[in-house]
Image (cartoon, rainbow, N blue to C red):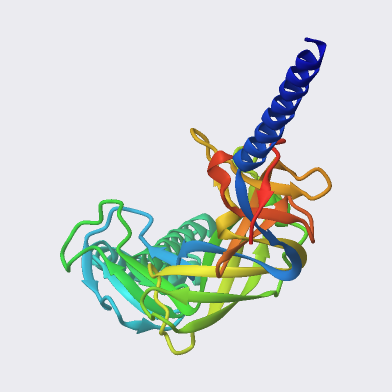
Length: 336
């Protein structure tokens, strides 16, 4: 009887060991299989592209200082004008009336002067006649300047808002713009304030000229940061002697902020968190044969890789296939 009991116990022990081995095999079989890629860092140019609308470097609106009737507009849209050129003649009827008054006062002053010279008029009468003539001549000079409007700059007429005979109502009669130099103004993140320099060359692309490159230069870096947006305005000027670039064109300015060494990871390694815009990567720990779920900060997309600023280090291995069954700290089986 004792012999049979020993045999039975041995058989139970063997069965138990067999079950444990099978369980171990089952656990090994149930480990999620993953494929890995080793990531490396590279020195990458730090560039950003900004959109803006082309503006003229200088823009002047031409208006009188009082509500005159417009006698004649001497230029039209598209005309080039020179600084000091008469571009608008306003109604001169009041000026003509004032000229008649001046002619009459000249005769009166001449008569008074002759009488004064022979003692027929007092010094007060002489002074009054001269003062009245001076006042009328000063008014004429002022009105003459007001009835002829001049171009304050050399440039191109880009707007005409009245026809001959219209009454001026407050809207500028003409707009003149200097377009031999044009500019774009864009807002840049404060993190790059130290990286941008006055005179720095900027690559410009225009929708009007697909595939063609233009070069601008940083002309003004505004000294203050906008508290709401944490950006600062930068003006970029473009030489435009051939008048190819026009105000209103849509432009893209690519600014180079130098180079930095960052890790590049394959597109396949990225995992998007459900319900959020965050991106994660599973990083493999060879010693523990486990993965960690690391949040990454993305930079530019370069070919089939992403530049990242944090989350993965140079030389680490990341999961590029099999992420659907993974969790932070989970043990995995690596396959080729």
